Amino acid sequence: MSDDIAVKVDGVSKTFKLPHEKNSSLKSVVINFYKRNKSYEKQKALQDISFEIKKGEFFGIVGRNGSGKSTLLKLLAGIYSPSRGGITINGKLIPFIELGVGFNPELTGRENVFLNGALLGFNRSEMTAMYEDIVEFAELRKFMDQKLKNYSSGMQVRLAFSIAIRAQGDILLLDEVLAVGDAAFQQKCFDYFETLKREKKTVIFVSHDMTAVTRFCTRGIYIEDGEVKKAGDPIDIAELYKMENLESSGKGQTKGVTSGPKLSSLHSLGTEILDQTEDNARIKFTYTSKDNSDMYVAFSVLMDGISVAELTTYNGESLKGSSHILYDLDMTIFNPGAYQITSALCRFEGRKLLAIGSSTPKFSIGGEDMARGAAMKLADKWTRT
Image (cartoon, rainbow, N blue to C red; front, side):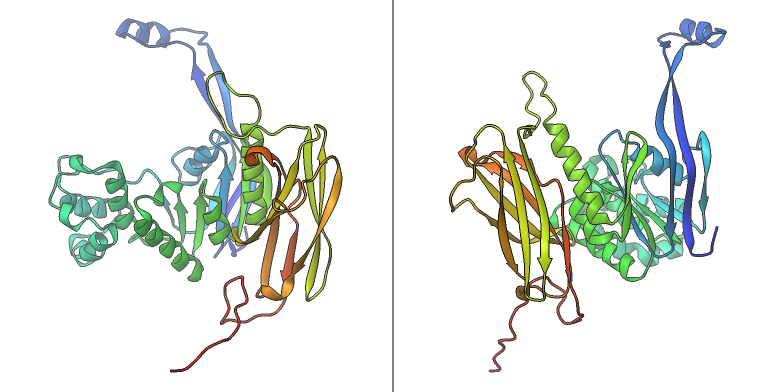
């Protein structure tokens, strides 16, 4: 493995054995222990996973519930061992999962700070020096002399996170549980992520928050059914995640349960950029409807996964049947950067979602202006007073 690689996952598979026998009594434990032919089924959580993470990368791992993310996380943290394949870690990995392990509910918040710090390898004088910063970050000052059992689960995670970020390591493994608490505390978490990214720390980030994935990650993978379905640009990964969730929500509904928008094969929408100049980009939306619905097209321009401009044809003439519509996007209103277009086809009645764009084209605007980090190009209309 080359020196610029922080983590290498090579052909990793993980299989669990799920026993059929239930041990409900001491007798059943003894009987099942001596059985020659124990019955069980195999659950393949991960199948032949391979990827590399370079030093300094903010690497995202994305997938729906049950995809195998948690298993992969625990393999990287050394909690599980792979059934096949190998994992190489080049440096010290700090896992931010199972936060609060080692906390004692009968001790106060203050006492748990020193206890958890000791588990991380800090001595008492080091923890004393860090104590005020930990309490300030967790925003729990008035609760520090209360027993931990009186804390809410969110308060406990906030305290554990505030302690854990003091640990020093080469590679950080961040779980989605970190963005806890109110908006102010979540922003503190995100500010911490920004610091890690700015300092070129190697970070493995697991989340269901696609805005955070596209904001922080430089590269990533999408896992489905224990396999890597896609690897590369975090914007593409996030879009695939959204597509999979929308498609899944439309695949039948359990009686009495509403699972979200149901998408039909009667409708489709494609999006492409026909041509781009310095001043204009012509976008083509090709739509199809087999039920003669009154429809409209909506699209968003995204930068780092965040919508910076949106428009619909809702106020115009309704669309019917199968055809296409063009839109000329003014490029002069955007600063230099990379952008992406997402689209949706909707019914006028109830604004019901019928289809999402089958493609998400990208465009870029060249140049670099360090004073303009946002998407929109505001005019320099300053007035001195």
